Length: 590
Ligand code: GDP
Image (cartoon, rainbow, N blue to C red):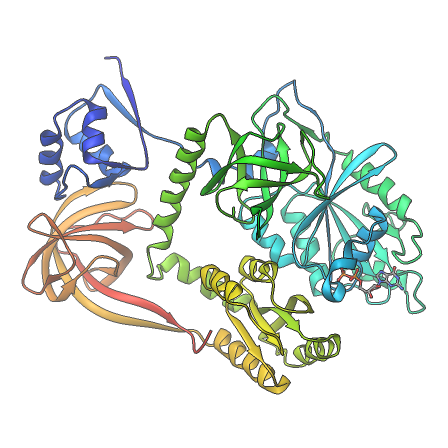
């Protein structure tokens, strides 16, 4: 029999599904009822449930397929994307990384020969920025980062777009924790590594020691028989900057770096902020295709029509091809840092994609309970290292310096404070975004916080703590560190149930029913599945029903329908006991 393929979204209303299947909606509702789901026409059901119903209805000529709505997530695989023969050579993307104060900004300055740092308070980079330099008629794109946490945030968003990691190590300071992280990042991102051993003009410079320390990280210089390119430079005297660029290009050429041009533009959001009179301003890095003014773009949950297109300096341009960092205006709202963007044909498409992403996103944040998988992740994270990321702002350079120094002193074996950004002046939107991307706390010393910033911080879930006395600030840092150290897992029993029937089991969903024997059953809690008094699994209780109607709670002595989400394969049997409980992480403050 010829199969008819019906493509539906991850969630679909009962009415829409009936229309797509071309059956009366009453038949669908009836079948859902039989399976223990009391649904109305406008109620949404998920793909798995739809699949079950299609099977139950015996609609053998219909093959249900889930619509791929993961456009914004599709970045990870893009590096491995198979390119067409129309693909053209593109400039390499070089991420400049390294320990704070080792000279990333100065080196970029020297490369670009512009004063990138001059406009910044305290000379410390506040956000990820991108620049382009031309060397021997070839363009190189640089990404500048404030700390590796921001890079982890980028990576979390699926962006493995760095071709070369330029790791800056100060010759007078050597390999430091953030250097090691940079190396780790480069390896994870599958990027080639070039090491710039900087500050060789300084009296305390010891290049050999740095090489020795790097080789302990399995980065062996070429002259020692290894294959890591290391260039000794000085950002101050500009010694060997040309050689460094030669090497970066040489290493980038190991791969044939190409990009599609005959496709709608796509790439990554690397920065965004609001500007008075201009609205949302976003920095994008084009990966494929060409951007031009007037195009519609979607980035995660937001969309817009490009009103102005500028290069990395902000100068208006008419077209931006692969590896080009651009600044655009025209988004209706601020796109998220690390979001994938793409150009689409029409406003309608743009709106549809943004709304789809919005729906998918809101589904995730709805579950406030800590699931077992999340908990495991958190515990293992805790066991490994605890870092307290801090963005520090102070009124004057003197206080800033002494605060940074004092923060080093409060480090303990278990928790390390990392200043991932700092500067003199009031807290800016960039500070908040940096903190949000790296789960950092912002500390302010002797400064004011505008209500705008407070609102943004609240929206981004960033904690801002302002003090006027240094030791009070330090005490607060210690308190937060303690809280990081001692998260308490609190489990509260809610009730239990004996399974009397199992209606459906799929990959990760079980629909069953039984009698509540103690307390109550309610949606959103967790369940321990016990067989012969032994726990065989833990499940999430998605929804509960009383007499086939969704219920907020079903009490002791009542019959109860359950939709459970499983983690891994699980077959629930009649007679199994499910103990319902809530699990919450309790930290002392923060
Ligand atoms: P970043 O935190 O890695 O971006 O480091 P910066 O570029 O802000 O540099 C930190 C400090 O080191 C600044 O005071 C720079 O002037 C200084 N610095 C950077 N590169 C050199 C160099 O090659 N030689 C010397 N003597 N100082 C440098």
